[in-house]
Every structure is written in C-alpha cells, then in structure tokens.
Image (cartoon, rainbow, N blue to C red; front, side, top):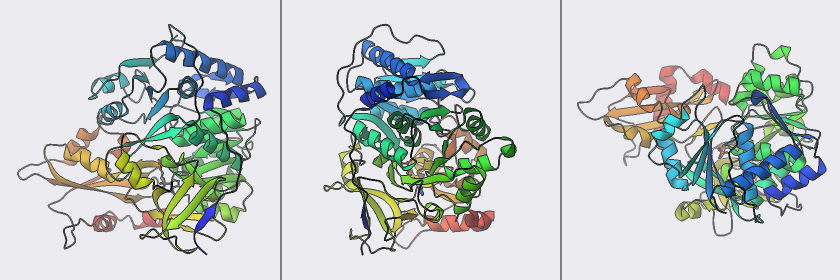
Length: 528
Ligand code: AMP
C-alpha cells in the first residue's frame, strides 16, 4: 500500500471573502464578531461589516485601484482585521509584514511586493516603527498611521465585484534560498482553508476563539479570522503580542471555547505562575500547530486546560496553510501521535528522492495537491516551478511518514529551517545578512536544541584576516536591522568549518560540537 491519501469530498466555497462576511452578517447581525481586549473594542457582525464597507470604499477613494498591494506592518489589533477584510472586499491585495521585521527586512519586502500603501502604528513599547521605516531602503507611495479615533478616509468609492480566483493576500516565507518569497494566495485558497479548519473543530456561532498568535501569519489571519468569518464564531484578541497571562485572562473573562497556539505558547500558559487562578472551564477545543507538538503538552492541554477536543494542524504558508489536521472526534491517541489526516478536498502523498510514492510507514517528502496550493511565488517563476510541479503537486520540504488510515507524522525537515518558538528561521537568510558586516569573511548558521523554544540560533563566524570583533559588536549590528528572533543566541568565532572532502560544509558537525560543548543533550531529549 502506498503513502497516498485523498481527504473526503466536500463542496468548496465559491464565494469571495467579502461576500462570505456579508452572508455571516446576515445570519448573525447582533452576535459578537470581534473583541480586541487590549484596545477595549468590541464589534458585532453588523458593526464589523459596516466598518469593512467604510474601509473598502475609503481605500478605493484614496486612489488605490483593484489589484494594488497594501502592506500591513503591525502587531495584533482590530484595525489589522478590518484592513484584511476591507482589502478583500475592495479587490486589493493585502501584504502581511511580520511586526518583528526591522529596516533591512522591511525595505526588502516594500520593494519586492511593490506595495502602494503601508499601514502601521507610529510606535509602541517595542519599537519606533516610523523611525525604522525611515531607515528602510525603499518607501511606499502612501504611508498611513493607525491612530485611535482617527478618520482615515476623505473620499469613498463603491467596490465592484471581486473574483474568488484572484490573489487577495501575499505572505512572506523564506524557503531555503535565502531571501523571503511572497506566497500568492487567493480568496478560494484561504476561505476554504478557514472553512475546513473550523469544521474540524466543529466551530459554530456559539464558539469564541482566543487568538494569541500573530495576525500577520496564516495561523492568525486564516485559521483565526477566516474560520471565524465562515462559521460566525467570535474572535478574541488578547493582546498586541503574545502574553501568556493575557491569553489566560481572555479565556477566563471572555469565556473562550477555543484557543490557538504554537507548542511554546501552550507551555508558557501551563507554566504561568497564576495558571490555577484562571477559570478555563469554558474551553472545549483549539489548535496546536506550527512546530512538532510534544505528546505530554497535548495531554496537559486536555487535562488542565479542559480542551478535550484540542486538535493538531500541520501545514505551511504555501498551502493556505493547513494540509492535515486531527478532528475533535479523533481518539486522543490519534490526536497526540499524528498531525492528523489530510483535510477534505486535499490529496497528500509521500515521495522518495526519485519522486516515487513510498510504502506506508516509510519516510519521504510530503507533497500535497488541491484547492489549497498557492498560486505561486510573487515574481519568481523558477522558484514556483521548483515547488509546484505541472500536475499541481506542492513539495513541502517536510519529511513525513503516513499510516494506512492517512494519519501523518512529521519526522524532520528536508530543508534546514530552524523553528524557534514557532517562528521559522532560515539559516541562509541570517548568513546572508551577517555577510554584509564588513569584518565577516564567512558564516554558518545552525539550530541548536533549546528546552523552552524548541531550537535556538547559533552562528559560527570566520572574520577577515586582521579583523577582530566580539559577540556584542556582532549582536549590536543585528539589532534594529533584523528581527529579534533571528539574532543568534550563540556566536562563536572560528578559523574554519568542518568540511567534507569535496568541500561541502557539514552543518551537522557544527551542531554536534556545540551540543557537546554547551551541554545541550538534556534539551535534545526534552524536545525529541
Ligand atoms: P509556515 O510556512 O510559517 O506556516 O511554516 C511551515 C512549517 O512549519 C512546515 O513546513 C513545517 O516544517 C512546520 N510545521 C507546521 N506545523 C507543524 C506540525 N504540526 N508539526 C511539525 N512541524 C510543523
């Protein structure tokens, strides 16, 4: 039996995101749609829909035309959700930018996406975004600062009909080739993924989702916002950025029935000093995803957080994002030992290096096909062709094993990505950035096991002859230019790297040597 599985057949949604929002509003006009606890703002579906209308008209009134790209560089706030839905309704393309990005990364994304407008807060406790933007290599035509109570629009133009096959969102992901690539995603891709993900959790208009994950990532804006738009569930934003206490308080005070997170977030919640003081009895379900989910953590989320129907999802940005997901009904054993089976209308196969589908139980690269596969990488036809073949199969770069019932296990990564607390870090991207330091001759970046974050970034640096530098100087160069989660935790200055006879650098040896030297074996066990 070969490792191929086709999810159940179901009717996919043909509507656009804007139309689906209209439909849900008509069904539940007075139910709560969105709560931003840190901003003290609440919207019913009717209020959200009319705000989205106003913003969609305003965006077009400010000179943007259908197909234009609109960036959002912000932590979680109601404005982010309004902009996402308004762009969809106006036929504009939202470009998500990680709020942790700094000038080097921001300039790159502004240029690469050719965005016409950028929405951001001028500053917050974490950063002065206005200043970081001024240091970026490229600037968008329009820069609009979010401000409480501000009226953004001078002129209104009624949107025309949007098309569900059109690109509505660009999300950046790095792949193995260094610089971030823009993943082009359509209404059909995203709305259907949101629909199917919500269905696995049996979401209804009576559910309330606590969303501590960032909106800029598909976990937030698709599995959170769009699942809520399709099923009429309330979306609760606990804070601007992740805070375990705020997430627990949101569940308690706002009676959430579902909670999302990467494993690191659930661990932080379970370990919060006031954990026992929060009433989490309203919880029923949720999603853990984004990185390997330890069985022990799953069990504690079921027992101590009352999420009897917690699910695991696996996927990637290029697949809208969810490919496989367990269901609220699956026995706990299935939910803790696999990442679930392919969602409806989703094909999955596991292939070997020759491209042949492997037998059940054998490891290979997971590939997927169906409505969920991205339209492509923005302006990068070669990279797209390497990732999606002419038959429509997307290569994920993840290694997996499939069971006879379609349940999959993620066993490793074909690409050498580091997952640090749920944030993907691409060694090549950090290496290329560190090369830009005038004293650096060569550099190799690897991930080391870390008991708290899963993995931590380590850089081995060879300096140009005659140069000297210490760790602080190199870290200082990183701060403000690249996101904090990419700044190496461990830096070692070396004279050379372990090589094969053919001159290929052996990163696994760097990893082994550091694990030995730093005494990280315990951490490896904890994250295995
Ligand atoms: P992103 O494109 O940021 O969503 O990252 C996707 C990558 O995260 C995948 O290609 C996997 O390597 C990893 N990933 C996501 N979900 C899981 C999971 N449930 N278990 C293991 N790895 C995961």
